[in-house]
Length: 375
Ligand code: UD2
Image: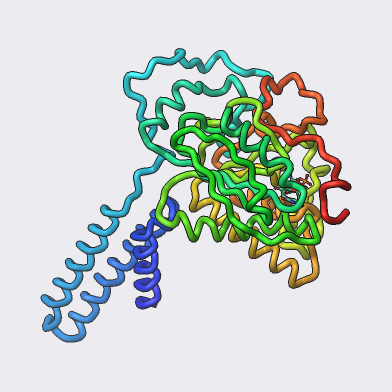
């Protein structure tokens, strides 16, 4: 038991050095470190009794060294979190109020995550907080087969509205790299094209995104404490999508279901699937077309959804809405720390509802039969 705990604490420390785990895991590591120290203490006392003090000095020195190493290592590796350190010195912005504001919508979930609506945040304040941090935002977008036709609009409107003034790195995954349109990008923004294979099934193209997002984070971003958003290509930006959307784990509420009871959400309802959500469970119905958060968090999400999707495939089952179903299951168990209102993924065919003061991003109207490889 001693050995196991020691090993798992060292693994955690190695991961801490590599910057791979988040603050929750840091707390876990701290607990592991504490238990290793406690066990070592027990070891010293116990053996001293057995051998009569002979081993005492060398074991005590070992213990001190271990404690110093562990504490030193922990002090070294505490990441500076974008999430919790919100420094706002000498910024000028509108006085906040807890009496006035949006009263037509709910702006916080029962687990106290903000729900972001126009009027619930101050963009000047938030940009002022995040600009000095020199954060970077990765965006992934897939344009496979005929969906390449949506890419130009997506990229051009992202230039106008998506994290304007911040470092943005867009990754385009496509089977037609030569068809990727040239779009003028502002300083600090860049685009990388990655080749992927086409598929005969749109379900597979859509679902495969989780695996590719997982791999991208593993390959390119192992040590960086920054953010990523994964977005559908058949969409355009119409209004600001910026620092107000940053969070540890971020989900967008689907515009089609936010007025409905959870019993009518299109969750996967077959218990045999790893995406299963039981009757009476689930918070909101979230979009597969937009989600994000800190790299480590999205890595965990993508890895889990991909694993569960593969496990389902082994059992000859495909969840009702592919990776969207797995995402919904994941977000039910692992609550998002920030929820974006349907302003962040509206649908062009839907008239705007009165509570939606601005549409920031929306899915374009498309003829599925014409653009998908299968029906
Ligand atoms: C919903 C989700 C979508 C996904 C899907 C279930 C929203 C707005 N959309 O939309 O994210 O969860 O349900 O699988 O929440 N793609 C291609 N080529 C193809 C087919 C798909 O590149 O031939 C990519 C593309 O980036 C597209 C995305 O996959 O935006 C999702 O496919 P979709 O838009 O056809 O899915 P849809 O409209 O059913």
